[in-house]
Image (cartoon, rainbow, N blue to C red; front, side):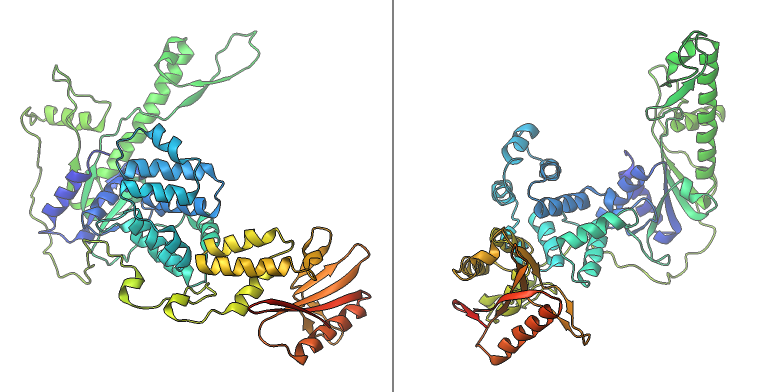
Length: 518
């Protein structure tokens, strides 16, 4: 899109007589609308669009999503490649792309982030893992220097992130939400806001605006990989019709080819002139057309483009001048007096993102299970450890589960080491190791309804090959007779289901692991 700068200049001129919400920018395609809207937003112009500003169409938003996918699935080389491709463009690196990709695409995320420091990136992966989800996104924005001035896409994306964090979301939950909603998430604003509207010509049908700015140079006959069914084939040919490329060579095949070729051109002409008519009739007071001067060395305009049509019209009206680039028709004074705006949108020239740590406050993620021990808060050790143990079936799961909780920011590196060691003590304990092997069947935290409709949830039920069950319950703190009574209740319920309970074990997890058989 060649015209965003000219659109901005025109809007700044019009602001003296019109409010922003009286101005509409019409574009041929959504892609053009995105280019204009992005440029206007970056230059402090508030914008509204119901269709062109889908968040998923912005490269920076796509980078954030790709990075989250890459962090969530460390083996996804396709997403890692997308991340690296964006960074090469974003950082304007002089190193050749293939060298940059080759150096990083096979590395782990931690090594990639470390290497990127040499390019001015300050993304702290350790901090990222520990902060709440909204802060994770801001850490990406700050660390990768995605935004300097105000950016509508990023700002609205953060609004979406904040709304999802209220639902205690994590990376996986958000990516699932994104895949479901990305076709609808767009930059939106109140219809009363003092903001420029940006929309495609198709969307503007039936609408009217005080001022329309129409940046365009549509190629009337352009199509993307057009195909047609050609039905004039030799009689002995195997097929009655062939799907072939639509191009000028078609007119040279035979009369039928020429007929199809001309018919297609006529349909394109009709469609694009209808589109031009719509664009030129949306303005109530002022229409500003921004186009290109496409003239050959012989002074002949290219009438295959809108620009050529306009030049041709000026020539027919004897108004065309080779040294003149602007033409005005009618009275430039506005018909209606500019009235006081009902509400004016505040324009932020700079994107502000300050880490919450710098405000000297303590923030706990809604999904987090730990207070930061360095800030003097006690670890809710029992609940966290209990939850993590519920994810472990065999002893090899210890590394997977602890790493996952670390990556999601529930525990920091110090806590990771402590909890991993303690879990290893549990799964390798002489009295417990057999119950964490792959030779047994395990049910963690399964609800069982008693005959009097009470629900019991044993921490771990382990069945051997002869269907005998061992009941295991995890506890922190001091031993209690109530713990014994709880396991006896589990045994009674299981016996009522005709299971034979071979052992009942209480596992006390404190500074050391103690196993008590009931």
